[in-house]
Length: 446
Length: 173
Image (cartoon, rainbow over all chains, first blue to last red; front, side, top):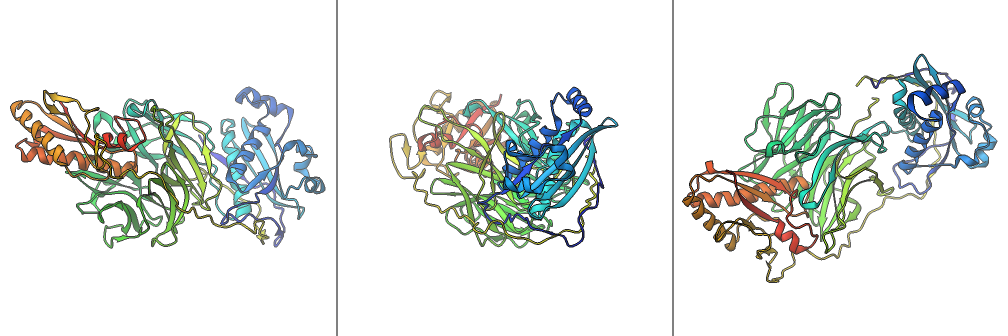
């Protein structure tokens, strides 16, 4: 259903052409790259057809708005005001008049064209280097018309990749917990939305408490904690079919689930007699293995991207700290030694960093450290925030933040926020209700 | 989900790069948190240290048998008052031998969700172990942790948090 076919459009760039523009995403971006996103041009007949099918007046300009919004959210680009554009979209796509774009200080330009062909949406787009007066990229793809938003995200991913040299993260989704009602009787539902907040959908009804959903990095499966029948247990949910099942047969509470990087195992905590240890279950042969064996609380496990190591949270030293171990549970080593308590370690998909929550002197921080615990950097401080989840390219973290309740018991809210690894570009992620426990999917178009 | 196939026409370009950003730098948020410490020692009449000693939220299983015990921050150790409450519960359970109970363990909002689930379980089990030493069979007791999901007081202050760090004994039948 979500298939999108991309195909070869043109071969344009001569070997060794030098592009002048590049965006360095390893630094806090104080000067976002000025980029012009020309509305995708569309012929009258296609326009009317799409208006009928999608109830969108001008699908070309809708798609370019998605691209623009994505680029803006990334913090690395500054999409320029369309009112200043001199060249018509269809002509610009054929051959931009670079002087015109130069005049409005655009360094890069995106142009394109939309058609309705054989019941499909066909989109082509080009990325131009304005200063060098050269085309940098040209791609086309066809898909079912209802996928039009994803087309915008894929274009953004391609542009981002071309200009930063890193994979994009725009054609992705976020699963999270939608919250409503008073703090003492909070109603929680699983919800899913596109990375930009569109297509929000609730996956459960709110009849039972649900917590900590996490994506399988290789499929559209999710693991989460549900209090179904007042038995807190780890479940699996297939987002496409809605099928659910309990993970394993444990005589007590299972919680804090995550997938292994190959998607074949679930790692989680099992609590019994006041002691929480870490277990894995193989989803194919259902074999359960006990990974930690310690009379302290061991929880929040997260695999390294190569699957060889696990970071986790334990209070074996007396307080919550972050530890790593081999995937068989051997070689346990504490890595957090700063002041305060540390929780929710999550290994970066790039493998080099572990994101965490830190509590120190009554404030909560989201931070990152190297996998040996060195180089700790705190990215953001607040009254309460936790549960970072990495974008698939390991450049952005999404987490949730709660506000303080005042003396009248009012003012509480829970919202999703994102922040770049650099500590810049902190943004509220819009959700229709209060929200917590976000988890970022892999790229859908891998 | 079907795979997306992509062929990129642009093979040749070698990115040689002028850094657009010359003055970017990594930000380090210094921790200068000076806020009130939740564990500050005080005895307000409703708290001893940071353990709740009041009765605002307490309900009764029977006359003179309080339903809950309270804990210090990050702790699952039973206080003297908690042990007294649990001995009363044990006596009541011995008298009413058909009653089964659920011990619901809770944490305050000042901790990460997953750790607090484990902490709630540990607190409820501390109460369970104590009831068992006073002769209540483990068959009659089940344990359920809510972590920080079900506070009784929605406030964001040390007193509210102290009321929420609790294990509540609930009749199951």
